[in-house]
Image (cartoon, rainbow, N blue to C red; front, side):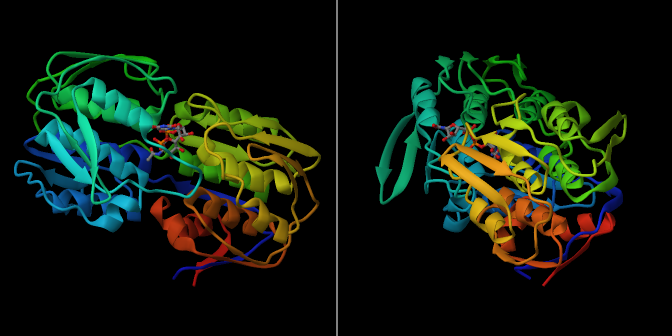
Length: 416
Ligand code: UD1
């Protein structure tokens, strides 16, 4: 079931429930390592990245099981196990285990974390910040080895608000002696969720959601039950998808307050978006209008939705300019979109101009990374005729069941 077949050109109609957030679940699951008791993490999506994190936690000695209410993790017995190589190298979020394991065990040896092929994705900010807290790093046998005799709070200034580095600093800071003051922190909602979970367990963290976070470390953490919020990127995919494909949809449980930049873009594209307590109503325009789009750290337009916006504007009217400021290589899907009839000129590795065409046409394309894959499915829904998106295992890293979701909205989509 590695491909998705799409019969395009059918307007979306109906209601879909938005799954739990991938980017919030993964660091929260990593954080359970710091809690020497059982926690239940509710609303985790059933996606391959979460399955990988579960197998990583098990390899470290945690007792983990899926229950009806969520994932139960008991980390009372953590051992310095060998983590499955593929689980570490296959997803960037395994990097959260660095801060969590340093905090819990004082040492860790792991492969270099992987993830989507959307750019260089260095980890220098993580290493520099953790070094300031007393961690020393070396490389042995291709692995990254980290250890700290004493993990100490520090005053850290991040030159760029990296989401992953902010998470690692918070995780290490919770276990460290004394106070960690982090300036230049990422403000993504997933940071807030991680801090909320840790605070529910008894940690003392102030300023989460702002660019200055203060962590008072060394407190004993207790198990808790915690609900992960809905996935803003999945919600944004279906929101923009509706703008591109046409029709009107209700996105149940969409995290409305986290989607301002995406809603604004959808409105600039001519859509009508109505916020309600339970989610979002979206009414598509006849054809998406041109916009100028620049990705930036939260609360800006998320890089994770740039590919979907690219697909949508391919079938829009007029000229759309898109600038990617977070990850290079996010434009790799341009070639596949061009196979579908899109007119995209790439000025440089960070900028494209899209001249909207009346109709995309269905063809066979290949997903090469998670969000780009979802964007190709969106393009298939917009296109006339049949499309086949291959390489869909990338999409299942982040979307529980993109076919089921679009089918709920009346689309003709099947995994084959
Ligand atoms: C997280 C999200 C990802 C999202 C991204 C930006 C998860 C699992 N992933 O990724 O979906 O697209 O935030 O919102 O939550 N950088 C460095 N050095 C570092 C770390 C980062 O130069 O040590 C650079 C990266 O190359 C990139 C930028 O900083 O250009 C953003 O990276 P970061 O915010 O760390 O993204 P991730 O945490 O990897």
